Image (cartoon, rainbow over all chains, first blue to last red; front, side, top):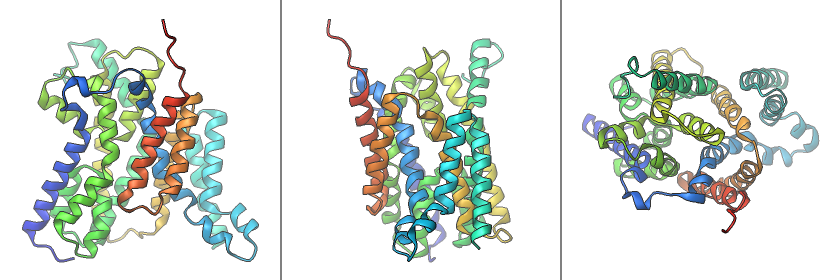
Length: 117
Length: 236
């Protein structure tokens, strides 16, 4: 990494500016351009869509490689990332307790890693 | 001022409700803060800039986007462009926030929008679905302050412990699980499942697109699917 202090601190200032512009974009537009009605209702699902778009690729990332191995069925069924995420989702959907689901998923992930190692 | 809580019992209650409401997301914030703090030091940032990124940039998305590119000595303006494209989902969040913050004075509006990240937006939309929102700015900032303390605290911890922490992908994946855990409870009702299906399909399709544009396309697809799946208003 070769950056001068001036470059680093201008980078930090510019990144903060970009972040501010992105996070306040619609808040500085004229009020008539701000979404209303059904679009505003549907925008309530944006965090759900964003969080899935961030997490799901990480959960399934290694599956295509396993598919091409000699016995793909077993490798896919015991995949630590996939299996722990499925367990986590099942516990949360059944019990409605986020932290129990997270504890179950994390424990399953670590145990599967140890077991596979 | 929104911090003037003592004289406003309702505002104070909303502030506390906001802090309580985002508490399930704190493990995710802590894991990601730690990962980001360690990553900044391992990639060779000095202490000052690493703290500057934590407290001034305050965006895991921007930081984790530029770090690998910085290792390859990419030009500063290319780094900024990459961070801007990766931050596009925040533009959608600002549309979510616009209705709730539009009456605030400009500095307070910008300040609140700047520190509002995923779990706080998610909390606001969940509460909004349950009924009319009272004291929503206090709710948002109760959530924001707890998130900021957790994120910055764990980032500083990661910066301090970078030399001794083993940095595999395992901790980062626990962070993914923690984010996934706050996502699953949002799957209630037809529009939510439609948004989820569309978002997952598009994010997998766009997994190889540069600058996390797949993530942004998935957010737009999710909102569009929710729009199609939600009941149409009856024509009078």
